[in-house]
Length: 253
Length: 289
Image 1 (cartoon, rainbow over the protein chains, first blue to last red):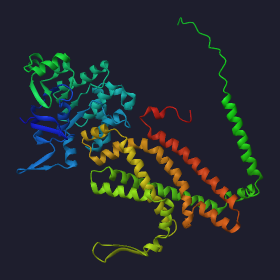
Image 2: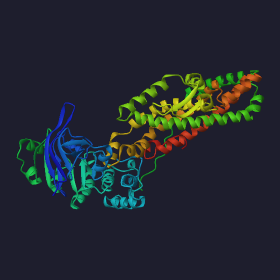
Image 3: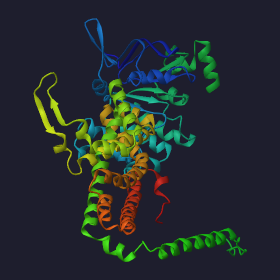
Image 4: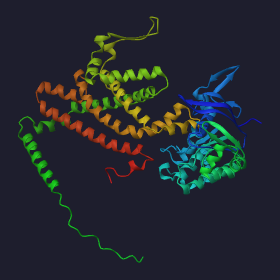
């Protein structure tokens, strides 16, 4: 079976600063993988490399068997055009720490925007599906609300619905609850838990240890741009093998 | 409810002596100006009233409005194009846009207007040929192309493009970069992202200064009178050059400009409210509440 995400020695530098220093990992279809680690460890950068919001400096990264950002012909690599990159991103949903909803569109408009303009779905069908998705995230009554009228938790749930509207085969979550008031975290995690139960392949950068322990199939602990250790939640969170993991967990648990 | 009602506070309000002083000063000043105007032998209110709706004045008003409309439409379209070029990853486009803005912002509008008015002196014929051949796609005497309001429209639009470009660029840069990322992550291409996500949001920042641009443009059209641009100013100048009723005719022009600007200011308010959708801060408050 082709891995949904496969990384081989992925490196990323910003100028002289090497943020990723050789990442190797795999995520199987249907797997929920949580990236943990201190801030600055490169978790978010790696996540952004997966849908080519950042380009990798060295190493190779595949999503569903396709090389990210390049096309291989013979033994030469060709950079993809913007059009081709955009085409590949259709299948990868992304949820941001700061929601990034489109403030000039209603909740419904946010969700139908890409299906109508990118997938060229008929407007009526897109609206119907958007309503189903809003129902699913528990916001059917907020279809006509603008983002500024919604709470952080509601905005993030709309953002998840917006990503799901593209029928992605992979969902990336970049600290989806870090910008939320504590009492709003639960409603977003509930939606994510539901997604995981439905078999969605997910890569989640998070600081929610409870969520990682309960929902993740694999936990990856990163520090200083490398994967320190990975395994099941029980292995990594319950019986960490490395001092750095133990030190981190001692602080957050 | 068991809460007992409290009587409203009774207190002596603060006396605003400054307001009375200001009112007195303004009233005195207004009286001075008004009486000076009334006593002036050259204002001639009956002549102003007589000329206000004369055909040549109305024709000039129409041309002024037409010039403003065309120059703003072309100027805004060109401005958006230049702004996108300026922010493009393509260095050739970036440089071209920067050079255009540099030139048209760097020379006075009046100079540009006179220049286009006398373009025939620089280039007697306007010719477009297939590159490296003598085959002409377009070949006309300049003075046959530059007729009527064409030179005025060209000068005003090209100048406006330079200013609009800077305003639009500022508006685009004011949109959070997370918006572009979110759109890209949804598989939207750069052009679609710009059109559907960035520009509509940039409009909120762009609309107020562009409203000012329209008002400035309406008044700048008076400059085309130097090349007989057929606008309101040209119309009154032509007449007062013959009958020497300079002051009344200038007053006629001033009244019309002021009336047109007042209407535009009102329109500006509604346009700004339209593009403030989704932003509560711009929807609350305001002039009419």
